[in-house]
Image (cartoon, rainbow, N blue to C red; front, side, top):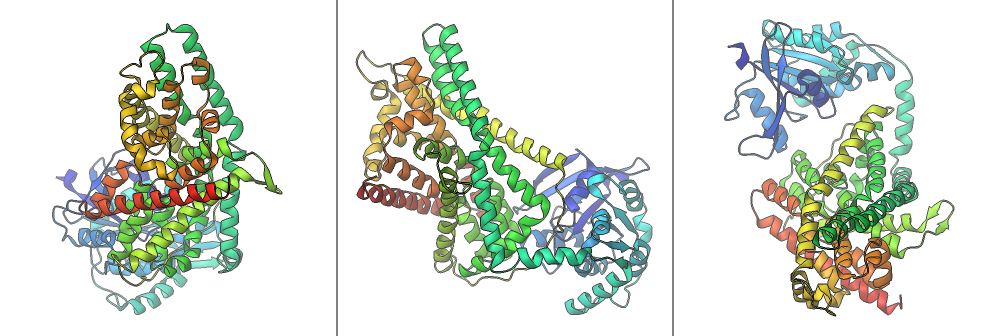
Length: 615
């Protein structure tokens, strides 16, 4: 019957709980949602030293059992045995951050008050030692009345000892409440301070040094300037560093296209390879270097501990539009992809805050928009400098990202005063310690994100591009007739063009924005495929999409296209996740309507403004 036993990992956010879960379970994990809620259920199999196995649950991070969010409510119900369909865990593994002990001990007391068999994993002791803290696990064990095992999850230190303690935990259940249990929250904080002082044997000046960094980086005036300067450098690097690699990939695609023309006989197969696969999918793959560089900086800021401080800095701005700093983390995640950003709103306690954050998450410029921005900027913005080390192309990219942020804040302000009316909620955030990012972790993270991008190129983008190629290629044009005019796709474009022509869009753009609903990057491959099919000269058809756009579009049209993608709705997958997180289609439909309206209005304003200026 031991196979039916279970244990649950609980702790504050940023305690290293997930890393410990990965170390204990390895690849033996299953991820799903709890029945009836959109909170993730992460379970794995833990093999004990005796050979027994038990189910290990990684519960959402919590600050209190007085649940203030869907995540915390699930954690409370599971460890109290009141969640329907989830049995009471036999053992609780309480994860504490060794370098932030006092804060984590507040929640620890609430868990221990339950009187359940409990083991404490004193995690990240290596970072505590690096920060100048010498801890006494035995003193902490005596104060809490349960076993305390020092661990370093990322290096698997203490994992075997923790497994043994879990196996024996039921013999160490809390027998009786001690004098500091069942106290008020204020009394718990005083008790946590007392226990932490008794556990820390010595402390060096390292904490003082790091606090000095925070006094600068979290300064309400200096901190935002540093943050925006850092973001500006990131977007400069996206173009400056990626250009040689992107040019090499574009050259490779051109070479492959030339080989295909030389080796394959004229006909449908050659058109499929050159116009559909290479011109379409290849036009997106060449932007892989920009994606990798952008994620390199994002991962670097996350791993160093700076990202959480950026969220703290943004709390004042978020409060100005009726949100809290809690919304910043989901919105920041949306710069990678809106899907995890929307899912991250589960940690927001206020339902109106959460709804507003979901509705504005698509306005954050996700990585899928980067190929669209990059191809237009490369086509129309010269590679010139506007100051020492400041490239004009990187500056334009920075302005586009900034436009998405400003747009999201304005929309949030309007929503909080209308459909999601309410006051901003409070914001408490724990600052992780500064640390040097590990090259191995950065490498794994970059590989994972590069693979996701390439997988999208080989699946969603490939399928959408080939489907568009078929619509563009059939029926075949009569002699002297444009293939676009004769094709099914041309008929579709003719139907849309009268609606989009007032904002400066041509027929090719009108056609490209339809498959772009599957994935943002498809807009680039759709344009490349359209121009390749439409052009009879095969050498000209093999020309890069950037050169074709530069030859055929006007600057006002290009700027209107960029403005459209700042506001246009996200991919269908994002809408599906929004439906799941809001439990219906009402709000996703509202999202689509208001985003399309903004996209149309601002694309039109941009186009006619550029025309009026004579650009």
